[in-house]
Image 1 (cartoon, rainbow, N blue to C red):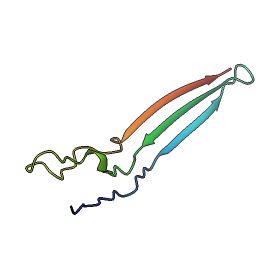
Image 2 (tube, rainbow, N blue to C red):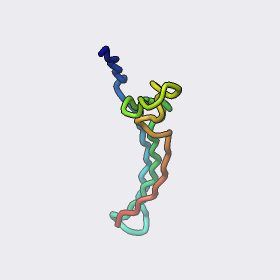
Image 3 (cartoon, one colour):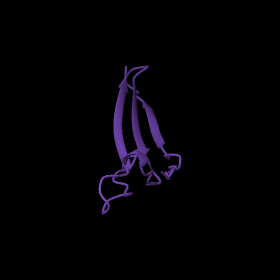
Length: 81
């Protein structure tokens, strides 16, 4: 029996974060931090080779999922006192 070896490419993701910190004037040591983080910024798709179907002839060899997620952004505010 001849087999087919499928090698997926390596997964990678471009993640970035920015923040700005403000010192509060009314009391020493109090700070507010505003933060923005982005995940999978380049929107690159990495196919999951573990989801290749082998069942029927009409769907054989189809890749049905990805191994990474869609691009996401999150915002946060952090208070330190």
